[in-house]
Image 1 (cartoon, chains in turn purple, yellow):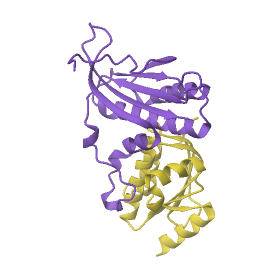
Image 2 (spheres, rainbow over the protein chains, first blue to last red):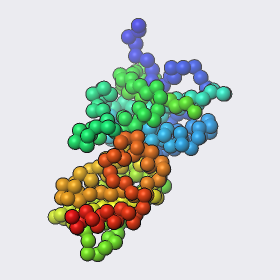
Image 3 (cartoon, rainbow over the protein chains, first blue to last red):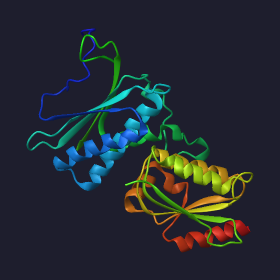
Length: 163
Length: 125
């Protein structure tokens, strides 16, 4: 296995149309990302109910980036990369990249809907929603930038949805 | 579509507030709800409301930020014998409540009138 970090901008699967949007990592910019993804998914044939699920998952992921990855940092950005289905394809794949603080997804307290109220770990609500609304959810950390001069390390959340 | 909130006190002699919510409740708008909760129930600096009925028929979207704000308000009010009662959830919002298990935490009523009836019982108990 090569120790060279993979570049965050390249899709792991050969395909199709790639759509990219970069916004400042601010709460009032999150909706630009959700509407960007929603428009692409809608054009790809996803139904309204599924679009709502995709929108919420992207919202939660971007909000986590603003609130946690870039905590104390005001100059970060979020890069959204959307791969639309091939003709006759049924799966859309969304990647969200940031260059903020990495985190351990397994260390986030898991939200348990059946837990007694006193034990409720509401801190993990966003991650819970992402994992329940989307498929193939996985995180990568420490990815190299697209260009050699970019010394930053990137975090990437990739998730998909099948219609 | 932004978040909208209208606060009323339906019974002048009772510490019951109604929050009519609409639009989108997410991380960029939740501060409006949190501020209104604080203004309504804080015994020292607020109006001392004991029960807050949240009508949600106009609310089309809620993220985890909104869910956490509702839960925090419920916790605060229940410490003083009050409660947060929800009513008229849209199907999309109801789906999210069911998914995260909040349907078993909050008292949820199909109509505003039913929620107000329970609110009166809470403040007189």
